[in-house]
Length: 139
Image 1 (tube, one colour):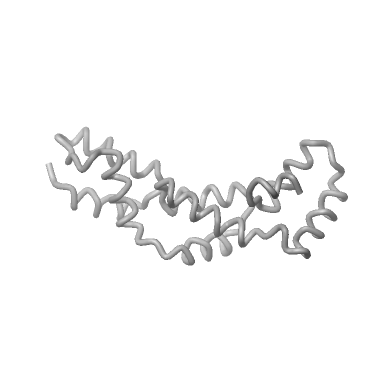
Image 2: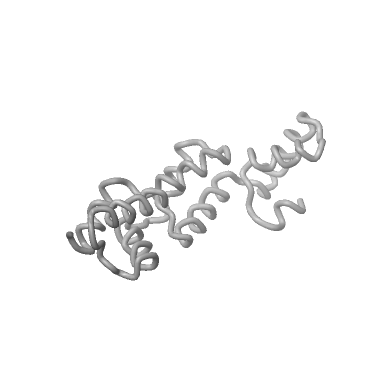
């Protein structure tokens, strides 16, 4: 309960943390089942909050999906959480670009490639990155 009081956790995350603390797997599963039935533990709620938090951090959909998968959230639930966020990813990528590069268009191809790699590392698709780079100016 103390772990859930701090922040939402996925079932997979919580099971891993409890296993590291030496709890038996069958007791962990039983406790997690009880928490889910009481509404204290919800992968859907975790995914929704995780997506909102990562969007505020300036991350894109590809990175968010990968991080959700790593935390044990299935693909369908992860996609549903992303769609529920109703984000225009091009606007999000443009905002991230503006914050990082202060709207400064790239001076040369090398700088353009560096800026594109930055957006890619944040989890934006190649199509969205191409559109953002076309918006900020061509070299």
